Structure formats: structure tokens, C-alpha cells
Length: 205
Image 1 (cartoon, one colour):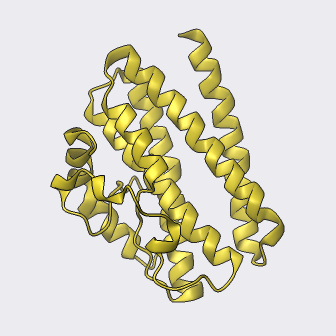
Image 2 (cartoon, rainbow, N blue to C red):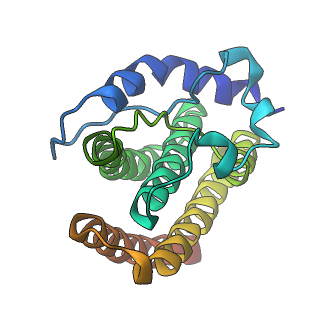
């Protein structure tokens, strides 16, 4: 079971994300909607997610690779938002706090847009989840403080982005919808840049 601080961070933010995720708006504004774990009481600390995977999270098979990718990437973004909230709950330095907020400002609108695409294109009301691999990253961030927190958070974001790049690489040849392909290409470029920046910051620590 994960650290209580994770449950606290998610409980504080759940109402905001649920409203954002259910919205049909596809606004590009700097929405900083928070991360949550759908349908789980805060006091579970997400521990019951341990045996779940993407196939059990979706009630019906995806109609095409684009829908499958959107489902997976919504959950993936949600994991980073939950990890960011966990880091913020640990009272980090202002430097890392600024980095965390910047990541949230990028990933939250992207996740909201993907939820909207699933609704508009497939009639699916996608509830963002946290995958087991992301839950482990959140647990590691929750266990740190001070300089160790800053280093661990950056390392886990790098690992998280690398997961996303692999997902994009796997699905790029399968995309059929131009909007999904364009969005994935932008994610790839943005996250490659962020990985380089984070590695540079780690080297200076």
C-alpha cells in the first residue's frame, strides 16, 4: 500500500479532475486540473490497483489503435499528475516546485483533451486511472524528502517520459486519425526535450 501522503494529495485534488475529465470542452487553456484515482476511496492509498492493467480498466475492447492509445495515454498522464501532486505535498524547494507546476500545466490540458476526444469520437466516458508502474513511481517519490525528493522526482519523470515515448513509438505506425497522430508527435517532441533538461539538472546536483 502506498504512502498516506499520496492518498492525501489525490483526495485534495479529485473533485477538480473529475469535473475537468467529464467536461466536453477541448479548451487549450492552461488548466491545472489535478490527478485522481477513479472510483477508489482515499484511504486505500491506491493499493488495490496493484493487479490491474489496461485491459481490465476498459469495459469494452478498443475499436481501433487510436482509441486504445488515447485510453492508455490518459492513464499515463494521470500517473504523472498524481506523482506531481505527491511531490508538492512533500513541501519541496521552490525550484522543484516550479518544475512540477510547469509539468502539470502541460500534462493536465493534454489529458483533458484526450478524455474529450474519447468522448466525442468514440462516445466513451473515460475515467483516468493510475497504472501499477506509475503507482510504484509515486510510492518512491512519496518516500523521499529534501534533496532526495528532488533527485527521485526528476529520475521518475524521466522514466515516465521514456515509457510514453515507447508507447508513442509502438502506436505511430498504427494511427489512423490525423488529430491523434499530430498530438502524439507533439508529445514525443516535448517529452524528449524535457528528458534532456531533467538529465542536465540531475548532472548539476
